[in-house]
Image (cartoon, rainbow, N blue to C red):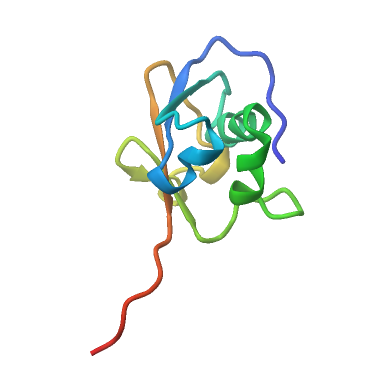
Length: 102
């Protein structure tokens, strides 16, 4: 996991509905990381039951998650190292599987 330093930056993470049961049904969590990765790591530390749904055992983000800063996928930015500023919004989008092919 990415370790975070003390920061005055306050980004908001939007929790998708399927994961809210791990955050006491909170839809938004305010974090104080300097980067997207630090913010998500802090989220996992605040809600340990959520952590296994965010991170692999090796500490990297689960590959089935899409992470957005505002409306931009962090893969088009600096991945987990993407800096965050006050008022930034981080969205976690889990992949949805299922359905049938026609």
